[in-house]
Amino acid sequence: MYDMIAALIVGLIFGWILQKVRLTQYAKIVNVFRFTDLAVLKFMLTAIVVGAAGIYLLKDLGMVTLTGTTPTYIVGNLIGGLIFGVGMAWAGF
Amino acid sequence: MQKIIGWLKAPEWSPYAGGVALGLLSIGALLFTDRLFGASGAFENIGGAVMQAVSPALADNMYWNFVMPAGLSLGVIMLIGIMLGSMLSALASGTFKWRAVSDDQWIAMFGPNRWKRWAALFAGGILLEYGAGIAGGCTSGLAISGGVQLAPAAYLFIAGMFASGIVTAMFIYGKRY
Image 1 (cartoon, rainbow over the protein chains, first blue to last red):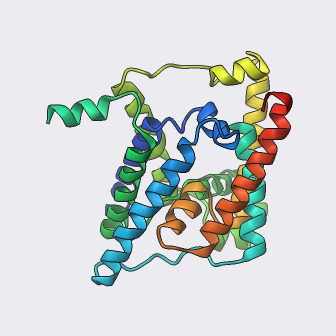
Image 2 (cartoon, helix red, strand yellow; image 1 turned 90 degrees about the vertical axis):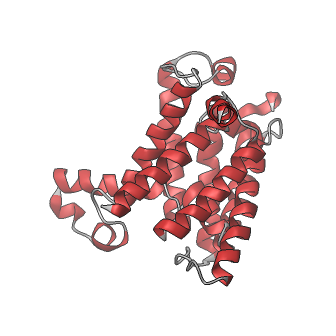
């Protein structure tokens, strides 16, 4: 039950942030691929830098354990990304 | 306090501010729930549940029994949270409205026909899910959640996503790119 409520709360905040950065808009997503609005890139990389710094600090303090991340499988990760990008530019999700 | 409420109600944040917020959320999520984000997997859980209802024999396979369990997973709950959260956010800033065609830019490029937009959404959605399935996650589940843990898979995925996204946008927009 705790897990479910936690997942809902994380989802609510995540959705709130995505809407505020306007990533729910078709134009925001497509325009990053046209180099006319780099919000997606700024948003993603800032999140990764802040998140990674905090998570690795807490990991070194022994407060968190990393989740088992997606295994590195060069062909799969890359081809999956290539197909994903087509859908992303097409639909604007 | 007034300032924080004003900020929460603002119609738009700078992408850097949003990025910091998402980074902090990822730290909090890992600290308090031992999990990070995901969105695309939820569609596979739901798809499995639909398949079980329609044709149990077809749904009885490795994928839906073990890899992506069918039914109400934590991912599905998070996905519901994401939709509700962005809806609440739009309501709070007074920008919420119902629309059949999503965007002014889309209308300027491809016209106001809603079926055309929905067909593009449906076809694009299939590609997104298929790509995410092969790669092992989507923008949230792999690129962000993997990226903050410095997983090489996340960066390969981001590279592929931008490479093909740029080429696709060039192709779709043609001279208007």
